Length: 112
Length: 118
Image 1 (cartoon, rainbow over the protein chains, first blue to last red):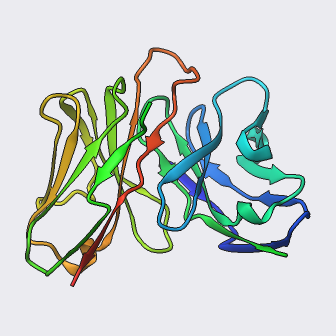
Image 2 (image 1 turned 180 degrees about the vertical axis):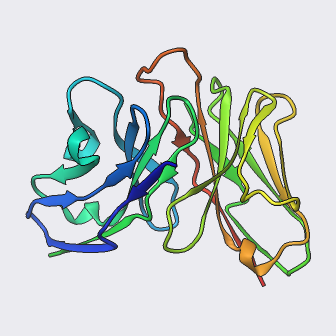
Image 3 (image 1 turned 90 degrees about the vertical axis):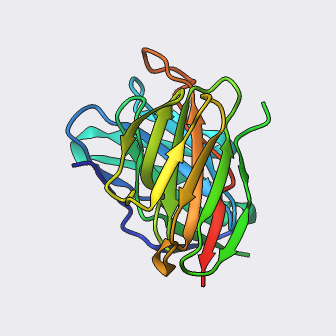
């Protein structure tokens, strides 16, 4: 069965510091992987996605993620966090064209 | 591209009442998904449509839940005899369906309808 684990429920970083959010998945075939961000009371916005090819993918707002098949991971990174990045981040996995399975999310707090 | 819209944004109802939510997908998208998100959790898949055909339903979708997409455009999700456990954010997403992965293979989410059952 498909599953996604985001080990960190909350992360707090200082503004300007680097960020890494962890995501581990369980999936029996070639995964399609996504990171979404959700601000309070809002829907989900796609940050980036991985289907195939280069394992380092670039997304919007300066985010990037690296797919590591051997570790079943798809961690999200940003070199310098801005206060506006405070939100909840969700990793998701799915087969092509079908439903997504989401992790429980990581809440990012940014200290000024 | 006006994005996915959902109405109402908030709904408060009493236990036992019926509620209906509407989702308007991005106009050229033929796939439409419903998810439910409870506090502290990620969205959970409920059901999806390709055009007007409902292709998959989750076990989460009890008999009290029904979804329709009669003309392959907007969709409605109805919950009958609401229970307090139905309180959640109901999210709708849409996408195109192609034959191979492409830049269009993204589910675009609406703002959600937050349901509170008293």
